[in-house]
Image (cartoon, rainbow, N blue to C red):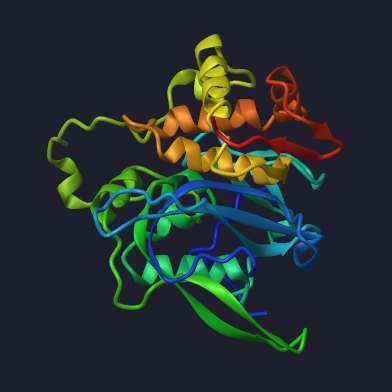
Length: 305
């Protein structure tokens, strides 16, 4: 079964977790079965967005997790691709909790133009993101920084209105050139390599953080250094007040902690830490080790100090 994305060419006709208008950076993104009531039985793309202040630095706001419906689980599954060119990724199935870096189409299905992820992807493409980066390998748009907004849509089948994440019309994608460089040699929706832009032939300037993960980034486990980093970050969760959070919300707060690190973590470090902290029971185990209260799915994070 082939991988599928939601570039405009691949689409077909057919919140409480909302990033309000402003500048933001995509700090996490994955495909997974929908966990919220509205998206159950659907394959969704969860986009984690960190708000960026006027000074160009991350604010102290929590990372917002936008759950963008891609399509029904009967047609689409979360999957893991080796890289942008892997058009036959590993099918992860439809069990709640699995997370992949891409989406697999069942029986050649295509995303509907009205799905939330299609609307978001169309706004990215219209703002200048190359279509090849929207062919279903989501790390391709990780770290994209833009002016985001919400568009109000009417869902006729539900008889209600809703909001959809988009790049603000006329807004900026602040690192568009850097993001589009990732398209060089990548596969297009038809599986053929894309032609790299002319400027890609020029020698690139050295960058502090590579967009390509290290070799161990794709592995099932994490090394001792990553495990220790994850524990150190977890210890920074306490805030001004005590908070009782579910494991999912603990993960959201942990993402906020990662984004705020000085010097900043690399994208590869963040992905590896997420693999560690996303293991079933890891957060509860660490909380108990630190003497925090764990009751069922809830973890009590004490106040700092």
